[in-house]
Image (cartoon, rainbow, N blue to C red; front, side):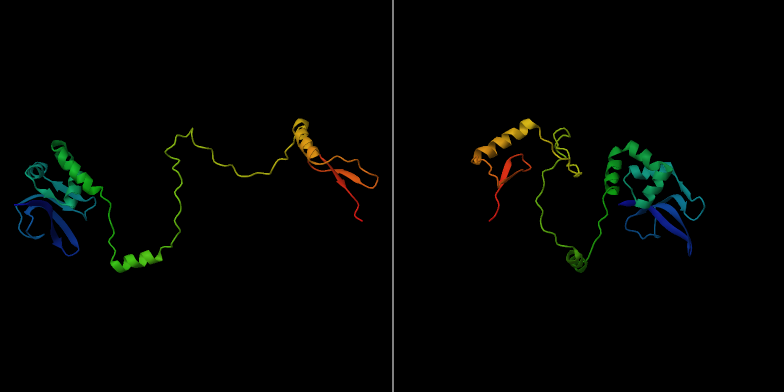
Length: 195
């Protein structure tokens, strides 16, 4: 026989109180029970939780399964911790049930509507994961562009540029009608009058 430790509703309309009972799993909520082991009055301020610890531990040891609400009440009173201390395997199985995420169930029509409402984005190539690399290997993030500073070249850097331009152009003496100007690179540029 599978036994459950659960609540049995008592009281008048809109004024409930509950008895904590050990009952056969197949019996109805307010039907036959084996033993009353406590009571719970949620409407009192503060709420009353009285559970016989010895009898509750006895039934837990022989295999009675508490409902979720009764397990919460036993945790508040301290009975559940005593039971888990005696049987660590019982605490591990209930902890995994409590930590399970709640899944929402949608009908097929609702799933289709949600899928149609999602914007379609083009696939993006995956960038290499930077988190797997240590911080010393990562490249620093690009800093935002600020006002550009004028680049000043020394005379030694400008000299090779002049040599290249002078070597590529034939040298000719400037005549009286020609005006010589210097461009930004420092090379002489000759202008001839148009005629």
